[in-house]
Image (tube, rainbow, N blue to C red; front, side, top):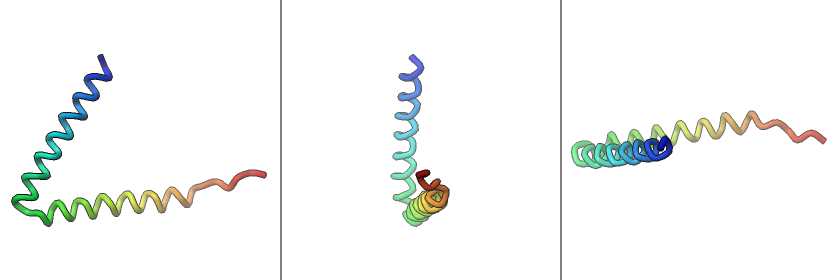
Length: 59
């Protein structure tokens, strides 16, 4: 039962996110572009930052 509630919540969140994005694309597409650029920048920085923390293999 818990898994189904979690999956339903994720599904509803996805529907609301898509609806909000479609509404924003109609009124101000630049905001959506800025958000996508910001998300990409955060993921890029995290990838760069975490790649510096790799521990060298012990021989």
